[in-house]
Image: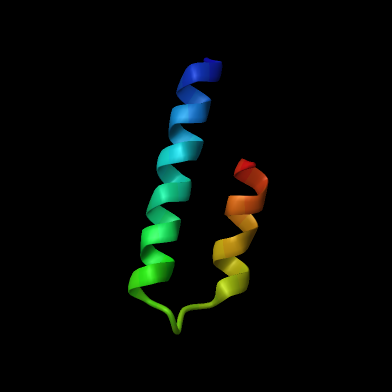
Length: 39
């Protein structure tokens, strides 16, 4: 369960990071929040 959770969190963080790079004008607050929670 923990491994699956970390893989999900890591994948979600990478997707959010790539999305933030692709859309720089996006809301940084909505992107930084899940990343901080994932850490």
